[in-house]
Length: 630
Image (cartoon, rainbow, N blue to C red; front, side, top):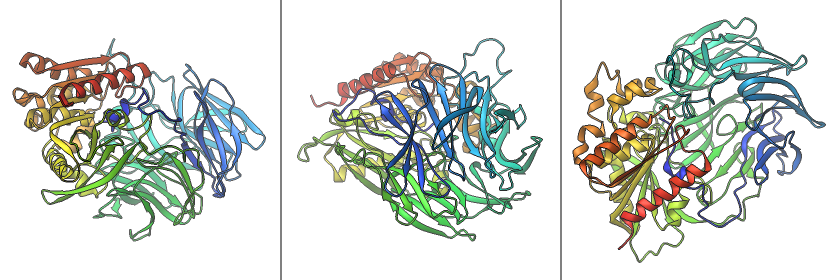
């Protein structure tokens, strides 16, 4: 299940009167480490590619070829050219663009969608991932195609393709029946290392293999079949070894685990960071060695891994990092890093420079106010060290107790991490309404090593719920929170936890559940990503049904007493709306106050502005009805 929380859906209507937050999307760094590019707003409803000097953040070029276009994935060649993708509004057609100091030009077009362009080592070709004739946007969180006609006979396949920059031709390379999730060029330019799977790409990432693809013939050779999920394959500069992030992951794109290596010729992968009490969330193999971003407790870290697996932390701070293809971008020699940094009280800013001492080089958001206070909270439960975040509204009176809403993140393999609290981010609406907000990272989360992430395997809603309740106890010792006015919310896995907690405890007085699971048995047979459950349950629902029934809210539904607002997208393939209908129907029959809204044409997450505004209004209104002081 995807890592989205209700907080992200509550903020379409600004909660704070302030200037818009200046974003830095898809950040890329030139191989020399002297320039960077990011997608930034240049008008209230339009963004462009902005090229900056690393030395001082000064803008040297703005690339904007189309007033109605959106842009994606800028990437640098060794000679400084920039390739990027453009897409005209309302069209399923990707334009492959090439820019230099004199301007930009179109070199190719793809009827469908595309992502992740990268130059070949010699700079003459460009590889990318393309879905020709796409029926939907890429990824299981996007709205699915309507289930009509003969089901399951066709699905989009994302293929590896090569653009000849001189000729302007696009050649699909990988086989048509294989979905390519990620890739990296080999240093000789003759092939790629990929993560891939046969069949439905939305469903089969959890069983993806590490493969080599020949750039001329498209021949696929399996390098390894890891026992974990894997992300971010990276080839060593000598072309002999592949490194990747491997671990128990619940979603493609929600990356976390240990660093593994395997010979490119094939073999058994070796865990190079086994036992580390941190989670690697981003990986690159530079000329200076392996560079990683780790989540370690409440801090994000830039780190270097030596060949033995020893980790040197270069830079650390309690914040979130973001870049185009990971959490940070590096120069070819690994000496320079660039990343967009933010925390709860500071808007995004680009930090760049030596990996041990990057400095802030953009200041577009310096004037943004701190709209809440934030603190990291740690506590012990069942012998585990657990961490979370407590946000207090700016208007909080320490002499008066207030209501608090706990937000459970999705995943479950994910984490609540800092992001600026402003008019368009995080839990702004709840804080603006006067609520304290608690964002725990219980067992199953990233940040404390792979053993902690795997600690909720075959125990959904068990130890992780105990961790959350113990965290609320810890918060009540340090903040004026009224235990009689507690709310709970979350989306996806957080939606499951919200539904489940209603059957396990009466501590919460109001619940909002977004795209939640109520019945793991019926869910197994109706969702579009059933492969994700096998690593967590060990067997399918048909082979071990009792394990699924034991953690289904429907199995204990007569114990549910808490008023619950439920919402979901009509075309959600990750957690179909039938799960919300089943739960709503049960609460309704049992006389528990409830409300259900199914939003038309939405997928796993409510994206349309009008729908998101409606979620915000209904959710805050629900909490106000049951948690506000009489």
